[in-house]
Every structure is written in C-alpha cells, then in structure tokens.
Amino acid sequence: GVDRSIIFGIMSIFAYFGYSQLDGTKSGLVTSIATAIGGPLIEIGLITSLEGTNGGYHYNDLGETGFFPLWIIPVYFLGGPANGNIARGVWKALGTLFQSDQNSSSNKNSAKKSGCPECKDSRAVPCPNCDGVGYYMTYGREVRCNCCNGRGRVMCRNCFDWYGEDPSDIQSIRE
Image 1 (cartoon, helix red, strand yellow):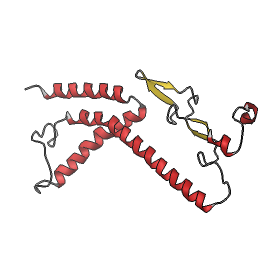
Image 2 (cartoon, rainbow, N blue to C red):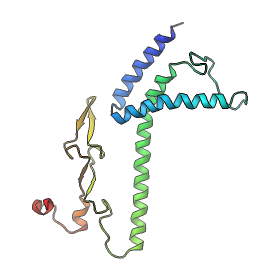
Image 3 (tube, one colour):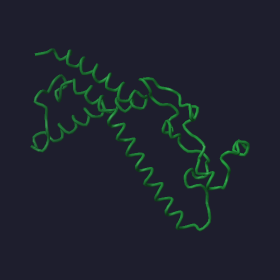
Image 4 (tube, rainbow, N blue to C red):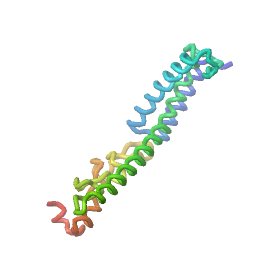
C-alpha cells in the first residue's frame, strides 16, 4: 500500500486548497482548525466511552493514534467551511426569527412609535454587500468592502420612511 505520510500529505494539500477555494476567510480558518481539532477529540471520546457496548463505532484501521488514522484530521479541516456556512445560515435565521418576534411584540405592547424597528435607532445596519464584516472574498483575496468602507455598517434606509426624512437631503443626513 501507500505510505501513510504520503496519504496524510495529499489529504492536507486537498484540505488546504478546498478551504482556500470554498472559504478563505480568517474566521473560516479558525472554524477549520477548530473542526480539525474538535472532531477527532470528540471521536476519541465516543470511541473510548462506548467501547464494548455495541452502541459505538470504531475504525478498522486504528492508525497512528490508536483510534483512527491521522489523515482524518485534514478531512475534518476541510469540513470547516461547511460548518462555517451552516453556522452563518443558522445565525442569520435565528436573528431574523428573534427580530420578527421582537417587532411583533413591541408593536402589540406600544401604541406610539418607539424607534426604527430595523436598526433600533442606531441609524446603521449591517452592510448588505459584505454581510456586516467589512470585507469580502473575491478571486481568493480578501477585499475591503467599498460600500461601507470596511466598517461593516451602512445607513439604515428604513429610517428615512420611519422618520419621514428625505433620503436625497444629503446635508440633513450628514448632521
């Protein structure tokens, strides 16, 4: 068969290129590293705690660790972008869910206008171009967002209607 270090090296190269093409962000790197460390540690815990119960699982090849072959670590690393995207989607869905719950309860509890429901009177919302991060990935490079100048926040457009202001009145906006 093929030497294990060659398999580990090939899997590590695939994991790096997969990460750089599928994510490439700093937060994605942290997620990939956490997945590469946490996944195998969880597996070790499960394999150890469920040993002999017929309820667990094990690898037929115990590899270099005594639990699994080392090439499983780059496989977990490559799972980081998927976990990051799932987390972003769940976070966004929960934010939308809680925001709509807060808006409906605040509309029931108060008859008067208590502030812009979109930005909570901060007059700024996350930039829709970069999702509030201040940068985005393009062609494998991190680029500062030109819509928010890298701040991650833009003026709340809903405030113009909420407060009856003219979005074309630049002087008023600057004040």
